[in-house]
Length: 356
Figure 1 (cartoon, rainbow, N blue to C red):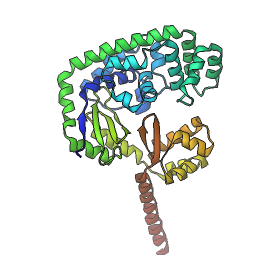
Figure 2: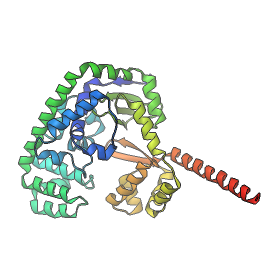
Figure 3: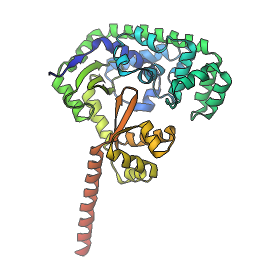
Figure 4: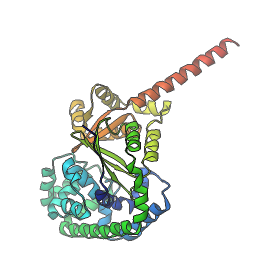
């Protein structure tokens, strides 16, 4: 059976809509660092900031340091199955399925996002109708004071915030449609790179983002020029890629392979991280499995997983609503190379001293 390779241009605008909130804020530099973008993309990011950043105070809630991503992106990825996500072909469908819901349901989803989905959605639904319980729970959450105040303001005026979020969504929709219209020729030219299936598959395989024989659906992204995101379910892989995907992948791999005595020492000096590595040496796991096996709260475990993932020790894959983690063999190859380098230097120094 032939492998499927499909370029889903019709979903590009819907995906870029979810990125618009992030790139309208300064948080993107905190997450990704400063990048050099093509002039056309830089102008788009400036337009997003100019038009959305001060739109109303709901924007503070949508993009926040403790959220790390926009509310809509986060809800779409955590509250929807792989199949449901793949069926969102337009901005209107994204709005309809994620934020155009009962205000109490939206507040429950906001709670879940800020709380890293530590509990079932039914728990947050209960909080959203009980202001006293919600206020007490917010006080226990591992959030900045700014984020706690935002959540408190939201529960005090749930209906008002629900309307404000819808307003900003429709403003973002108009803006993204305008951006695509103004840059149609540039986008058409930039997206041509995805027509070379061998080139795309080769880059993704090199980064261990896909399996050899997976069916691929490629969703090009214009606004998020740093994106390389793969999500697999039932041997079907949905990949969001920027036209600059090859450089993004190269930079990802360089970042993951920064191995030094100092970084290795810091990472392996913690007993919890060593226990995580011992478990993942045998099999891949998702967060709840590791939390149960190690008897560690999910939020504490998430901190250690993030450190290991950021340094390239782990590779993650998204399957439905779960992220599975496994060890990255390339990191340990880099550790071996570092050790070999030290062995050579030690032997050379010892030989030099013996000759004196």
